[in-house]
Image (cartoon, rainbow over all chains, first blue to last red; front, side, top):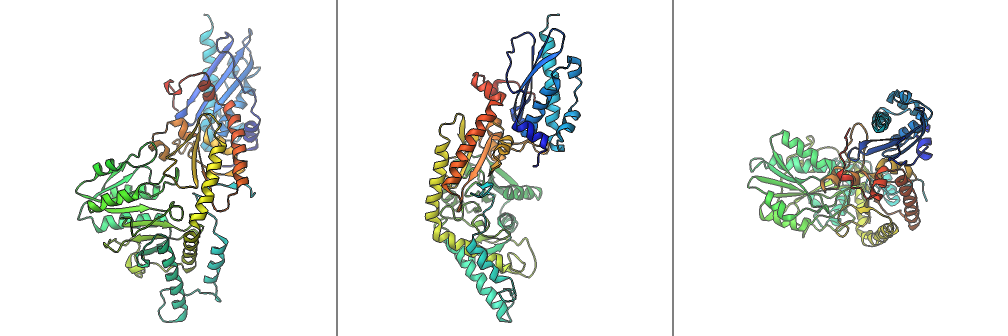
Length: 127
Length: 404
């Protein structure tokens, strides 16, 4: 399969690879996908006291498009509020990376990963 | 080194130059272009002589009689002709067929078609090493079982089934035994004077011959009958009509002749390369060999690099031409059915790479492959959340995944 230049770029030079301490209060972790489907994404966000995402990290087991989708969203969410980050749509990711139809599910997974990370962060906050 | 390095000889082989050269003499006006079925002139007679010489060469590799060889378009057609042909001919005797879950699609899909026609098919589960347990095969046999179809060598994991024992069992029960030998001819010995195989499918393009030609061995003693699937001029003693493709057939004959002469030496060299490849990976963690390593053709190595997804690994090693058991597209989220059938879990099935070595593989190719794989697997594991979890001692199978 031919990959777009943007997918190749993220795949070869993935941004923000890493792990954050999940026990830290400002950290939210989203893990989506399943080994059975051939892709698992873990996206972590670090939120500052103003509700702005100051850092993001990911690790992904999956095809090149899955790795590129998660790498891209770590770039996108940084500096955004939780509300703004929650509005990122899979179609934006698919369009940016020029994903072919058979790889759209990778962008869906990346959108799910952001939402899961935000939810995890919010659940951890004392109400 | 050619680029990318070709390590996919189980998918197809390049035509040997000696074979290609000979084939060219059977196409043009100044060559032997005649129709082998033309009985009224020298053009036809010469073509027939060439076809019969090729038939003898193909028969010689498997120690059969030339009269037992029927030309086809390839192993897929041979499998169809053998299984449908025998099932249709012997349908009054019974309508039960036994095969295994790791057969090639040409066998499995043919069996599915026969199920639609009212036949009943038992699909055996192989053991974890890919081999069929003979006692389980025997237990599946019934009074109305007419055919057992088991491949000699598996295309993905390269394991060699004990077709000698299966043949004895089938013969004692008067069940027709079909063997798909597309992956074994020229790679491991086939002696049909000794083996009680009734029908055997062959392909030319896995043995450095051309694509588009194959053969079906049909035993004469005891005589096995099949119903034609292709009707027409009654070629090949009525079993497969259609003008014979002289140049293709001559190519297959030459390829099989070379295989017979060079197989022993070639296998030694290829096995040494395979062992070198496996040894090169020895130091890697979480590396699994898929399929029995002892009962295996020398040129195949199927490995799972755990916690790395196959498609992304293929992308990272694009200077190699290999194949992966993973196909994670929306069309097919299923990993290799062969690896699933031998009980490999999802991660391992998704992480598999098949290396198949051949006539033109060098030590340099193997050494480059080892270095590249080590580097890229390490890189992808650092990206893999599953690798992190493994390193933290978390049992991945204990997690409730949300399959999408």
